[in-house]
Length: 265
Ligand code: MG
Image (cartoon, rainbow, N blue to C red; front, side, top):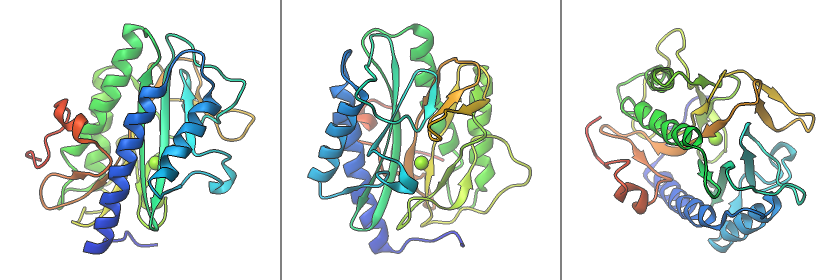
């Protein structure tokens, strides 16, 4: 499958999907509190997604049983919501959500703290976001895909964190996972040349310790091999001739100063 270049109409739909997803993340993040179950998070998240006329992209995707992936502490991604899993004060929780709006997907992840979290946990989440934005400097037409990957890797290395290699970002559009794969680590070769109209889900998964991961017996949930913490930050982006358009970020997040739209690439 070739890498797709989206038409103006498709870009409009992906903008709409991203805007909804950003809002869902923002609102769902505010719901997290100690004592709630991860299944409750999923239920509230699914309700929000459907209230915007969207379909949860993950539900039943290859058999995944929920709308929101809820991954706690040493869980990297694909945590399965459960009525027996309770959030505790001091946890970090990664929420990964996909929405399908009129046939177009948006995919994004955020790591939140529950109650009072350790300084180490706070820094890991913040710096994982920083790794994403380090990659954005090269997410522009004319650059090569692996420049994004190398910039993410370099940022993680700077903090002596481990980068997960077993899972990668991806192209996205009318299918949740499209070409190309978007690694979060240096790769041999430059990768494809980026072109305006490509849409990518860039998603660093950064570990406090080793980047090595294992799969739990449920066949889904990925955990750190050394049981240390992991954080996840993801957005769906549009490649343009200038700075990328980050489709799944909210205006509030932009106001926080974490991203300047149209800033120099
Ligand atoms: Mg993704």
